[in-house]
Amino acid sequence: MRLDRAASLAGLTRSEAKKAVAAGRVRVSGQIARDPAMQVDPASVSVDGGAPVDAGPSFIMVHKPAGVLTATEDRRLPTVMDLLPDSMRRRGLGPVGRLDRDVTGLVLLTDDGQLAHRLISPRWKAEKLYRAACEGRLTEDDVRAFAGGIALSDFTARPAGLTILQAGEDRSLADVTLTEGKFHQVKRMFAAIGHPLISLQRLRIGPLALDPDLQPGQWRRLTDSEIDALKEECQMIYRQ
Ligand code: URA
Image (tube, rainbow, N blue to C red):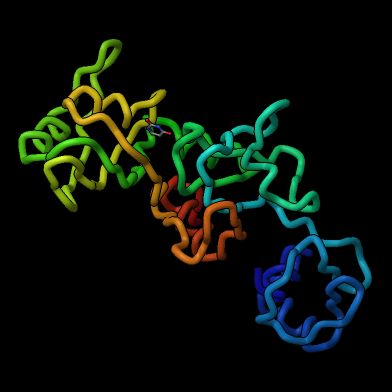
């Protein structure tokens, strides 16, 4: 987060925060900092010698590798939380929705419960984008089947988008968009059309895209504009 935005969390307007930075009233880890655009961890910022500012909820994107659980803790297996340094593991921080152990890609971690709820609730219809490799040749019939809503043993999936990227005899590649996320849903939908999945990666949750520079196992904080876009998607910006 920018230094001036972090300083404003101490109760200043953005322009007051800029002036406070210029006046040398803002410290980062105890040292006076004068660059308002400097990227900082808000928990290390204090104004006028006060306590560190309250950063509010945290938002972190993780590129989940295969073999890692989307959980906050597990006695046997590594979880997405184990990918973070100890200093980042705030109380209440956890994954938004779940990816299966063998599925890779974007996991959002936050301690903002309302935003997390809205992103996974089928009622809010936040779109998730997956890239799927499957067995056999996908055809326009499969695209129509996804669009029509695939009947599974216990429910009928909502209409979903299927965009074929490559269609080979043995293997195809496609992008899938869903507005719900039931247990093993994408795997079950592909199995139902006779194309078992080979691999699955999540690329996007609502407006939040997996950063292509983030390697499997790496994480980063969301930028201010990514957080604003998520809040906008979840209608959590209340204009007066
Ligand atoms: N669909 C699946 O089958 N697995 C996931 O992890 C996510 C969506």
